[in-house]
Image 1 (tube, rainbow, N blue to C red):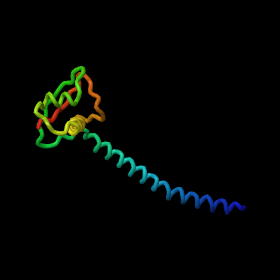
Image 2 (cartoon, rainbow, N blue to C red):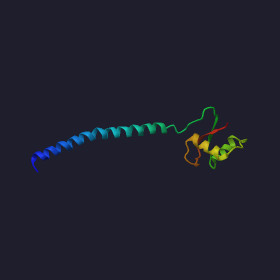
Image 3 (cartoon, one colour):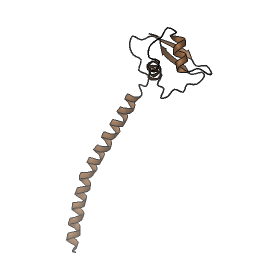
Length: 109
């Protein structure tokens, strides 16, 4: 191979690299913006439905979500699983574990 051929290949390789860099930058930028937008949207962990009234309850040792709902709404005769799910959603809980000293919002209407 001659020196001229190597020089030509280097030029072609350089052009390819120059084309790939802006594309790579654009992809990284788009992914970063999507990630940040998702994080900003995901920070609204406690959506409180409009028109609902809530009672703040401090969890004591031995309390359960079910029991707290019964205390806050003794006349409630609806679907208790749905009520527990709603309390979990309002308070940003991923499971049924609650801890003494924790303050929960219980919907009362």
